[in-house]
Length: 271
Image (cartoon, rainbow, N blue to C red):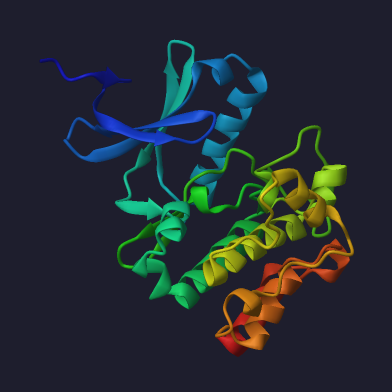
């Protein structure tokens, strides 16, 4: 039986999907594992999605960080855009959270530090991520974390730069309230997303939950509805750590941490 191929790589098996993309585990000419990520046909037809896809590849290449998935090549197979990435033997953070995996429960604070450091690096390199969520984070068995998706990333042009986007970026549960209502983004947008991830890592809940998704969104947007206190879910969380996470999640951007350097400063005091 002939081995199926994609862009000259031998396909081993599908790895899953990420909304508008599909992932394949493949082998290169030297029989090393790689990951092929490509746009599905419906999204590949739209110029804006193709642009985001290749812009994200350029950001990954520019960052050149050991904990950012390494880009190997990009191209087209027919009309389908694809990128080839290094293979990381790891689980995404969403699966780790759902399983309450010991990788997380044994290394929660270490993973939190790594996430803060990675997001700080992305900002210092001149980018907003705008899609910081568990599905875009990989956790290796040794507790090392990687960022894998930069399709929505945008350059930071000035320190206090804000931009109004035509389309809502990211997944709503991880999007700051002001971005949901005005489509405006800055570094505090990513800090809010980080706060949601921290909240989940410490409690296995989201800050705003309801059996009806629309009611959870109403609570997320209502300036008078604070997140459920973390210690209500997990009484073992230190009060100072709870305060840090809640400051990341402040409804008003001016009440949130203005930079990742200050998040890390406060983390160093308590972790």
